[in-house]
Length: 397
Length: 243
Image (cartoon, rainbow over all chains, first blue to last red; front, side, top):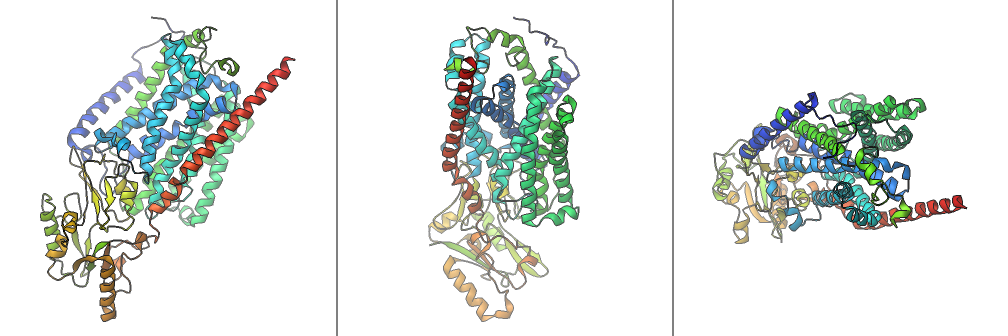
């Protein structure tokens, strides 16, 4: 077994123990859920059929995986070669995000053993049908995009090189699938014009979901670079990440403007000025998810400072999470006539999934050539074993 | 031909015979509840002396059938919106999508299915009326062809203009429903949803979904074009730099 550089410090530290406890709780809850039904573990009801597992696990899990398609597009389609070092960690994050979503779905679906029915029974009028297919196909694309990393680790360089030959069409398919279903998660709510609060209901929902996912996806790229940098004692690649902050300012500004327009169009400003429950939740979402990051990241000094950049990115991601929960929960409460608060078990499952995802990410970073300065990548830089994502474009052709 | 039900609140005496008949016909376990559940598909509620039935409205363009990813819910050619539990994966999108909040869930079951009125589809196929219509002692619920039910409703309103609200609930709500309702008091005071859009909600998602194939073609081509241009620019820069 090779000894990984600098990061070989597996000890049962605080986070490891906490993660293990949550995983244990997750397993207990899963057993309860599959023997006693959804009612026994969740606060869902006939009046409020979708809760935290859809609002957070599905909508946010997919949204935060958006970094993968943005960064692969930057490198392989826009030819911004400088971003190659972060392609692998973002693809891994994307892939884990989708696995997270699928696991969450298996818990949330009433009859998860029928999940494959989407393959044989088609209803192309259903947004959920489209979502199901995009999740299936895009998870496949992400695993193919990530496979060279694993193949390299075990010495299958020829196969890894072959996959690289198809990287451009693969990335195009990936970007198309992402575009489709980042937006179609918004389209899911187009069917409820009489239920979703006018602060959030708009025919523009697909476009808004797509735009905000790009913003938050880039935020996640910054955060994961920061976290893995801390964990593995690497420096933050400010020359790469600061420009992403600039792009975030642009994307979030456009998104914010569209949001204001749709709210004005719906005449829903009354609720915001009147500080109704929905109005307050909107202000929270907009302040931390749009206004604060745009202002922070627009200032050169803040954006070029690691703490400032990470703070801005973190706020954007948090605002994104609040937005998805507002669409799926806050905005639906008035028409449902009840206040939904997730049960402790629902919250535990969501936290456990995030924890397990982060643990897998950390393990992968330790044992696979994810980061350029980790040991695996050094090996992959040998001329005999060109890595698909690290090899200069002209060599691959 | 589309069949439906006409419910006349002014004729209803709140005897719950319809709820009971529904239980028997569809072999639903347990007593009749005071609200609809996965095991009670129709109830009669009282609002200040006026009665109103709650049940599936059997929309002409049902949101539930439109959103179901596996087509477990579907609109039959006769009119009833039926459910196939064998296909269902339990995503509950139908519950979210239904403007009338009709589909209910078996939250207490390890293998849950959705429960909702299916307009006694087996009976309808045989040319019989629904169990609720047959059981109603005052003909507050009658079964028939939707067009004829509308004419019947208009006739009742013409004969007794002061006794009825000047509208038939279900004619235009969410694109029209198979169940039509008449009332002596405003619909809102019966707890019926008012202010629903006249356009069928499935139109809104279809407007987006139907454009996807064109969009994907253009988007994929654009992405390839961008790739082509940026790569060419890079190659040229390299060649010039090399000289």
